[in-house]
Image 1: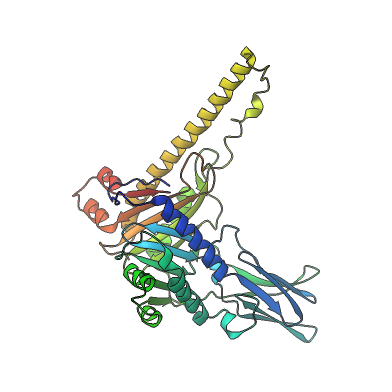
Image 2 (image 1 turned 90 degrees about the horizontal axis):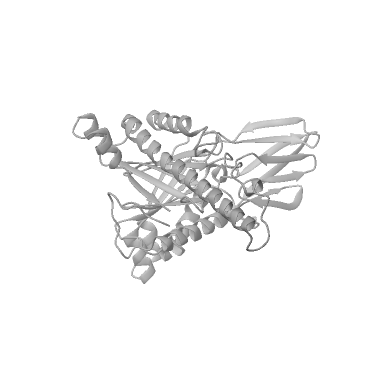
Length: 392
């Protein structure tokens, strides 16, 4: 994991690989804590998984349709700390579904685990409790987090596409359909200093819980229009890169969350596509005998293909960096909901060619920079140079 340290610098002893390792471990722990299971009143079987829930009871089945990219994700933001996001599909309010068919009512309940108890039923209270347990038991093991930083868990995030539960009979005919309202977006934060105190035993469990910052966004609260517009701008800019650019994987690959007192964080899941298929080894069919001139020529051609592919991907990645900086500077000024001391943050998760480019890159820009640009105090180029880039 590499870091570009301008203009924000890190201490020389900062171990980026260790931070990345800790984040991946915490992602897996949160994924396990919020694994969902479905149970019917007509069968003892259960179906579990993070991405799709399916339970068949008699003639009725329930499915949640979503994207395979919906996973817990964590990002380290220098100066703020770590944000873990539990996506929409895992945070839908799925306490139970009731279906009446042939005058017989069948119900299905959703739990975090196989134990049919009040503590495992999905509710706002159990969500907060599980996040609290995670922050108390696991988050203190994260190394290198500064005392003035924090760990924030965001349960639920804004996705472009909503999800619905549909009830079908086994013949495939639509029996019933209903929209399932998501829970409020739940945000729980723990200060780095409190995590250190829990780790060394100087802060009791009860006192730690009382110091957590917990907020909930009412599901009926209107989205801030400027954040929605910025989401649409980024979606339009990167929805179709053809075969010669990094672009969004699908229509559900862009999401955002607001961070109280800090700013707004957009996440884009991106890939390069398949435009380099012509640069394959298949075109090189003659390898010749060992140590022969033909073998040497074939080896040279293979190396040329590798270098061409590598240089092409590197150039297109640099183009992505430049494009993103331009969009943040040109359109970030429309985010009137941000105050001057808050940040516009974009994370691009790149799912392919990780042998050549980083798997993740964070862009961070302070709103005050855009104010200086609007007042003519700095140039557009200076504003783009003020965008902090962190590569993993």
